[in-house]
Length: 136
Image 1 (cartoon, rainbow, N blue to C red):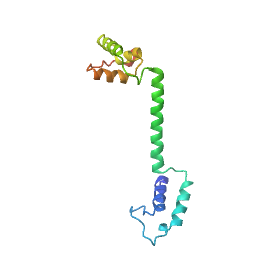
Image 2 (tube, rainbow, N blue to C red):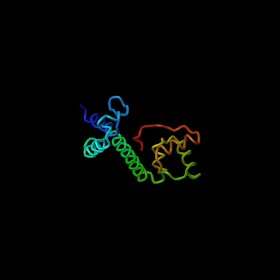
Image 3 (tube, rainbow, N blue to C red):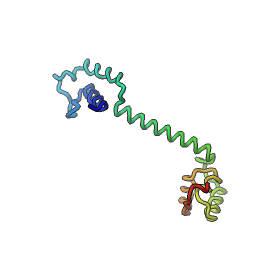
């Protein structure tokens, strides 16, 4: 039997639920007994296999951490990211764009992320120029 499935079944029993039907166990069932449910919970506390809930929580935390790291890396590479745009920066953006610079080149000059450049061009209704990233 799959260890994850076994853990899920024991979790269900510890909550007084039949793991096969999903229904509440009858009162005369041994797993409806509060002491037995406490014992099952105690066993689960020592189980090395994480529950579905723990797995989902861990995955969510990992994604949050990854986003945080990406933001920190972006702030090092693009110091102006997350700051308001000045009129001068917008003017410079439009000029560079009209001269044929791609979003990566503009991002390096303006010290903003390529996504920020792309979004600002869309906002001012200019069409971003995409070229290969080698021209960074």
